[in-house]
Image (cartoon, rainbow, N blue to C red):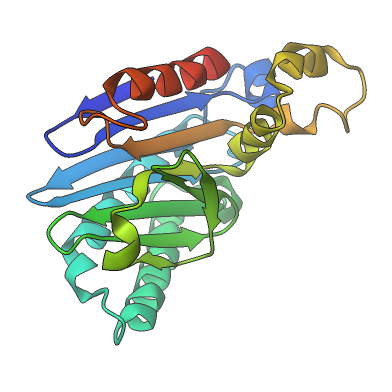
Length: 238
C-alpha cells in the first residue's frame, strides 16, 4: 500500500498482480498515482494487459500526464464546459497512448485499456471524475454508504459535504470489491484455487484501487474508523 497524507484528505493505493502476469514473472501492469497542488488533489489509475515490463514505464508516464492535465484544467470543469473538458481529456488520453505506443515500440493494446481519475477541488468544494474504458468510481458517504458514480460525473457543492471519500477501481479490483461487499471476501483464496477458469476470472487481471478519504475529523469514518477501513484493503491486496 502507498499512503500520502496532508491537511485535507488521506490517499492510499493498492496494486496486485493477476495470475497471468504472476505466472510469466512480469510486474503488475495496473498503476496508480496521487498528485496535489494548492487546494486540488488528484488520484488516478490505469490498467493494461501488457506483455512486457517496458510498458510499465509508459503507463506511469501516461498517468503522470493525465493527473497534471486534470489538475491544470479542473477550473474549467463548470456546467457550461464540462462536456468540452471531458472531450479534451479523452482526446489527450488517446494522443498520449498513440505517442507512447510509437515511442516505446509497443502494441497499442499493451498500454492503458482504461484510465480513471478523480479531482477534489477543496476551494470550490467539488469533485470531478474522468473515465476512459472500464473500471469503477465509488463515493463513500458520511453515512457509510457506497454509491457508484456514472462516467465523467461531477459532485457539486450541495453533495460535496455528504462525501467522506472517493475510490477508483480497475476492472479486476472491481470484481474483488463486489465479493467484499457481498461478505464473501473469505472465499478469495478458495476461488483462486478452483480449477475452473470461469470461477477464477476475477484473478486473471491485475488489480488496482486508490482512495481519497477524510481521516482526521471525528464522527463517522473518523481517524480510528478510517484506519480500520483502510486496513481491510491492506489485508485484501497483500
